[in-house]
Length: 510
Image (cartoon, rainbow, N blue to C red):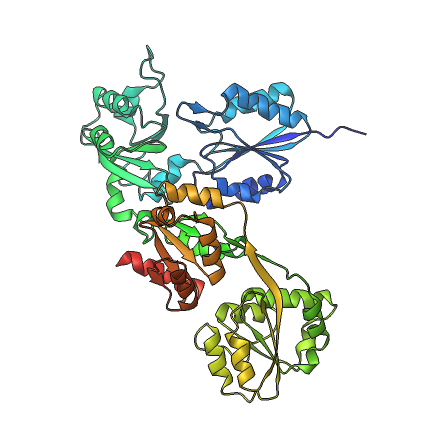
């Protein structure tokens, strides 16, 4: 039997925004047995790795090195020799000041096959996200990328400062914040005008992006005054003047706001995407997870006698999903509902129902149980059988009121929520360090389980939540939050994810 051969993909992870990785780079992360990633590679990319993949962090941040470069080289070779497919994730592009060339040489020496997957470098993406085009036909014709990490104490520089100062229209320095005074000194010494515009872009393409502008004469003092720290790129040239007109990324209403998403992980993506599009830095910290009920016996019995029901009322997307999964498990399809009318709470629930080929006969005006009851007042339900597949922990008002109207209601749990594990430590650390601006609640269960994560001591709980804004998807969720001692600052007018996002944007735009 031939021995399994390893292979290494030296992969550019992009500049920070996980959406800027290449399609090929993402595919190799998915295929990898081992993922070895850097400090500047977005951790969000790791979610695409196989559950079986070994994830190894080898970040180098300032003087704090997890492994030396030689150690990293040896690690990559070792993992590949074990027969693994290795995705070596490097921030930006592996061949632009990423030491990818050195790693490729070591793999070549070891006889290990490799591929290079180029990435979007921060040298071009960070200025673009700051509204600075590196080239412009009316302003410059030349562009240079320069390491800003050269030791200023070296006896001689490998950089041709005179050529840069006199012959290049735009210069981009990478990793140069600490050496900025020397960069400034060298450019002035070799003839560049003190009035030449300069910009520093920190954490470019991410919600933490900050841009500082000035000119060659004053930029070092501005950096010292503001305390701007790495990682940042430096752009020198007249194209920096275009930022005032072209900046777009930092204008978004939720820019730099750290927002905790407590929704179940499998449902969080829509909320995270919409908040991120508005500039938020989202921390996914699910307080609940959606799981199967303790038993499907009652639901299976109801499905077997679907023809005896006149109505099915769906109160959530999860209710629709779990119900139809069970229908299909029983060997049936949507034709089993041909005589049954349906009601759905909220457009998202109705949309999910439509995915299974059914239009809802009733969609109430607002997205809560009380509106369903009001809608049913227009229907003759006395003596009618109504199936209500929903969460085990749901409020009792809907079956109670329908029962008062004379309906025969079968309320059957088709899923349940339970506390999610694994996010408490991260959440408490973020709250303790005053890193959280806002927490979102999308259901009463998210509130209850968030409350359980917080310390039991009331004084400590209040300290952690001090100055943290609470945003709720609607009045029922808000009532639960208030009962548990939270102050609700934002409540959606439309009880949907879109409505919640709009309410949060409005809050910060005031």
